[in-house]
Length: 118
Length: 175
Image 1 (cartoon, rainbow over the protein chains, first blue to last red):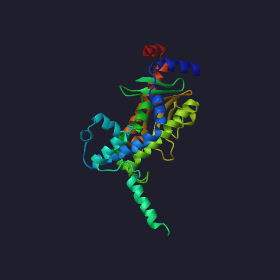
Image 2: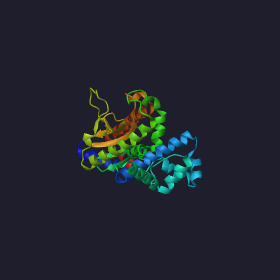
Image 3: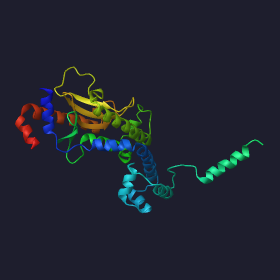
């Protein structure tokens, strides 16, 4: 069977619909950095839910958001805002991100002054 | 079963029932942390069997997320450069006869990758039939990988009957 003949055949055989993969793959590539962080956050949340024996529906109720939104968060596919992250941290009693706050920086400076040479 | 175009004349995928096509489904699953964690919890014994150095389910889910991203990018580039032959190799290492429609597999990018994409090759065209996270030595050992062998066989039979035996039947399917 000639290559062209087979290619013609499979083109005819193939559905009119095109796969959604290429578009999704390009989107995932463009958003890779935050998607990987979102995935790591999702894992922490799923771990905490298991430990506290809480369901996603109960978490949604505690956060005043829809169960669908919680499901998107635990799939690691939500571009979370700091407001949502802080709310989840408070509700579950876990730390999701750790950035030096003003108080921590101030404490650090105090230590530097204390230990600097005369 | 439907055949869905991914890259015209190069890459196609089988679509079963109401699911997304098998290629789209693979990367949707591998970028879904909830799915990955559930999968590795179900297959925790295989993870703890020693080959993967007793990795935890959380580490396995995160490693898969990272690797799937690299694998997806590799395939995207291979499609664009028409280099799919470099990704796919024979499904069976020791094959003493030539299959009419060769069964192929592509591995993830890491050395001991557990990500697999399964395909049939006809001329220089690949038709994706499924995917798996393979944690055991053989595909026959676990139900989810056994199902992938069955899907390869179903698709191979479908192509043999439709492409070779009857042009009329082929046209009926197109309509």
